[in-house]
Image 1 (cartoon, rainbow, N blue to C red):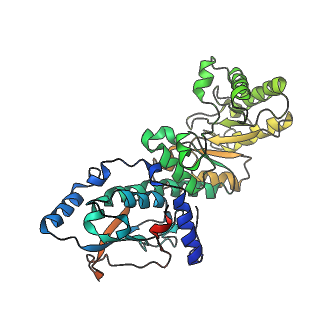
Image 2: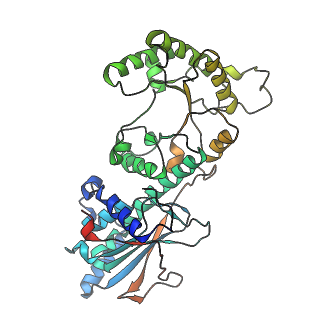
Length: 401
C-alpha cells in the first residue's frame, strides 16, 4: 500500500490497485446516504447538474484531479468506492472510466509545481459532478495525514512511530485518519477506531489521568496497570509514563525496580517521557554536564541519555524509552543524527496539520479538479489543459469485487 516507483510494471500496478481495492468494500466507508443527492457538495455543483438537466443535455466529460504540493497520495480506495456508489440519476458506475494513481504513491515528487495528475474520471457529468466536493475532501485529508506521517517515519529511520492524534480532532475522522497514517508508515495507533480499516487495535501506555487517580503515584499506577494487563490483556506489554512528577529519571528507576520486584526481569517493556516544553525535568536541574550549556526544556537528548544511562546502570537495558510531545521530523532527525537512544516516537496533532507548517510538516494539502475534456475534445479553462500521466492505472470495474 506504499507503492512509490513509477518504474513498477503496468501489470504489477494494475494488480496492486485491484487487490488493494478488494480489501476495502464500499460498506467499510459508511458513506452518508445524503451524499448521492448532493447534500454534502458545494451547491454550485448541484446547480450545474440541475441546469444541464433543465437544458436536456448530459455531456460526457473528463474531470482531472491534481494537487499543487508534493506528498503521499492517500484516499484512493475511498474515492473510488464513493464514485461507485454515490452517482446521481440512477447512473451505473460502469459508465465511468477512471484512471488513477495508487494508494501511497508519491506525487509531485520532484519538488516542482508540476501539478501531477492523480486521477482522470470520464463519464456523464450529471452522474458524478456533485461528487467533486467530497472526493477532493477525501483525498486532501487522507493525503495530508499520510504525507506528514511519512515525513516523521522517514526521519525516524526505521524506529516505530505511534499515531497519537485521535484526541486532537473530531471523533468522526479517527478511523480515516488512522488509516491514512498507516499509508504513511505508522506502525500503530492509539485508538481502536483509528486502526479499524487496517485491523489494528489501539495501543498505548497509560495516561497522566491514570496516575492522578492513584494519587500521583506512578509506581502504584503502573503496578495496577500491569496486574490488569496480565489478567485481561496478557498480549499487551507494559509501558509506564514517567514524567508525572517531572523527575523522569528517578521515576523510571522506581517503576523498573517495582516491576522487577513483583513480576520479575523483563516485565517492563518501556517507559514513556512526555515532559512539557515549558518545563525542565528536575533530573537535569543543576547537572554540571549540561546546566547552562543547552536548552533543557521538554523532552531533549540530554534527558533521554541520562535516563538510558540510569536504567542501564541498574540492569534495565531491556527497558526501551519512548518519547512524545512536540516531535516533528526536524527534531526526530536531530535525535537520530545524534544517536539519542530512543525506542519509538509518539506523534500527535502535528500529523493532522495542526502546526505552523514548520519542522518538516504540512499544515494543509489541497486537491483541485477541472473539466478538461468535453466529448473527448479539449475543453479546459486557460491554464488547465488535459495532462496525461503514464503512471495512471485504468480501473477495471469487473475486478473491484
